[in-house]
Image (cartoon, rainbow, N blue to C red; front, side, top):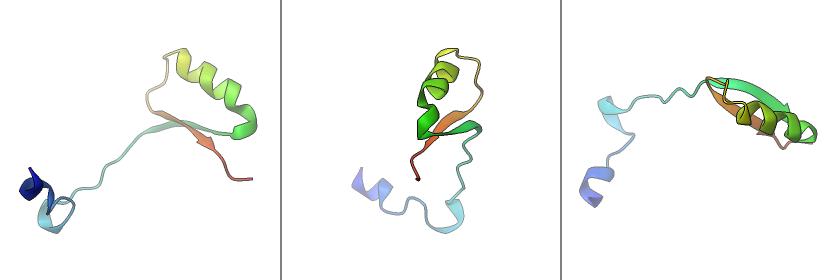
Length: 52
């Protein structure tokens, strides 16, 4: 298994992972973010911004 992972992310086979974002919320709005995620109507990730 180690052999298969040693070259991961290098060379011509490396690809960029694109993660769709539904919304970004400041940490103060975490309740809204959790409610949005819990509603299960999101197509991407809900991000919590921890920066002050």
